[in-house]
Amino acid sequence: MDSILYESEVFKVERIMTEADYYALPDERRVELIDGVIYDMASPSVAHQRTLGKLYRIISDYIDSKRGDCEVIFDLDTKLFTEKDTIVRPDLSIICDPDKLNKRRCEGSPDWIIEIASPGNSKNDYLRKLDLYQRVGIREYWIVNPMKKSVIVYDMKDGDFDMTPYTFNDSIKAGIYEDLVIDFVSINEAIEN
Image (cartoon, rainbow, N blue to C red; front, side, top):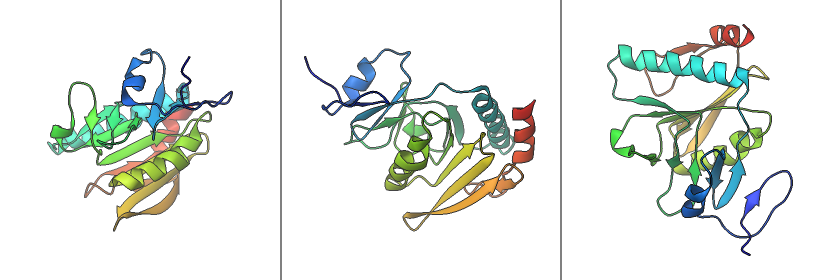
């Protein structure tokens, strides 16, 4: 019997997983494939979903008001590299090149990714995906943590991320747009209600 490379709290085994292995898993499995390793994704909490919904509405309404070409998409399979076994599912992807989207997934880097940290797998957002998104050159990466009421913004500058920490008491300007500012006080109110 073949073993697979799978990381969880319980065990590790030894074979590098491929894109074919990823798509052979049952649809109800919430996983990501990062450098040939399958990582389970935590089930989203109510705070996670409220934060996600509020951010989606704010960004989508902004793009619509500007008649912009970018699209905001939830939880979409995203193959960042053509030659590597890596497929992630960012909470929110803002994709400004429609040629990157096909019927199944995004092929290549979104312009802006927002991950909502969950207690069960925040290491993926703060370490693995940070490294991955830096390697692929994501223009902007936000980690929003509803439990800690914090936001860390990473802006790509000269091939490296500049990091700026914020709280849910702040209004944060999106780097990829001239005039989109997100008020996290209102997001916090939505989470608390």
